Length: 133
Figure: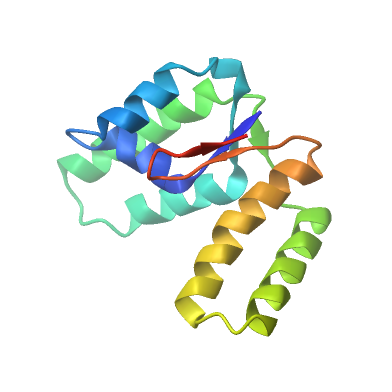
């Protein structure tokens, strides 16, 4: 199982996506790719705050009509177990003296990774095309 981050989906939507990200995605079996509901919320938010127009309409349709049906049965919820993992990770980041920006990055990426573990799975793909299994 590979839990995709928001920026991976966003990268694939670019007019000219990073070839490494495209190649990595193409090499994966689709049934191994998962999204969290947090990622879906971030994508919906990003689209909602865009100015009205063709690009916003296109991205909205792409998410709702293409991406979500593709991930049917492979959307992971953010429940109590994941919230506990998030709190643990965030408190460790603060104790380690990380800056606010670093804490946010660690929380977001870490909570997704932990979310996968809470669902008895593992793996993430960062937006820079680096897969971790």
